Image (cartoon, rainbow, N blue to C red; front, top):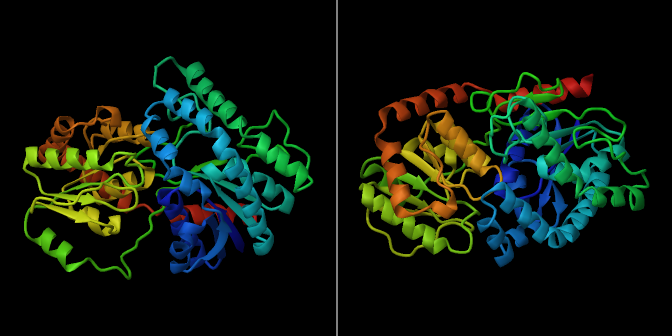
Length: 426
């Protein structure tokens, strides 16, 4: 089969789909990934075809306005305020992205379309125009209603099924704010009628349910028993990147010359003050007398001089590095959280926004890390206390290792490929 995967966002929004694409390619399918041009080398080096999409969303995330938005979206209401504030800036970017996706789709002429959650509301219309099967992929449980838990981002008020279901209606209503763009695109470019207003993002314009592929482990978030058959939880989509990668001699020496260090990194979420986060990390490590690795890649922590007990790391594959550390500290993105869990290491999450607070709560609920520390509360004192707990709490470390073993036995990519193939053949 000839399949097109569409995803937009940061590296964490792209990497799982490169992993899925490689799994589909190994099963004999042709795969093209349409995403921001910044990631073209990343897609191509893993043997997949690349489809062009502009870089404007990445540039917005990395701008002062984007970094300010990141720092002010640490709860549901902050997220809503930021969404409204940035809507006028995001709108033309989404409009251009739709045209880019359509150009790629016409060139690829796929037999099936797989959309990441952020791209789903945009590109569903293209699958309708091409009259091909459509899959929606989500790295977290946010869109499929259930009476058993509220939608991600809402407080768990223990008010029962009515409240839980209401939160999903609110999410669908919020997504509906963006429906004008896809409907405009349907009419003016694709010459299709607008999608009926009574249909949500989980259904196509003809009323058929869209299969949802949730790429996380049921060991971490159990599948609700009242979900429809169209909602699948496949397991994590890990990309093993150690095939052609070698650590630097300096990193190898540092790891060999002492106890396993604590990893601290916030990826592209370091906000406007990465120096402040670096100082907090250094002070917390010194207070707990722990060795540390500070990740300083794109948008990451910024520091110049470090004590000899700490190492400044530009980048390293998580699947190689995390088994060699004592604990992982990060912002709580779905991919980094998954990597820490698979490595069997206690996790400390310091969330900014989006799905990050959700994963922080899950880590604590599972007993594999201390309570999350929201960025507004992050200090050297709070981080030091969490690091001490993660390093010296034997029960927590044992539980993290047990969960890691269970996750390493799962085949999330294989499960997803089987789900896609079964649907396509049916």
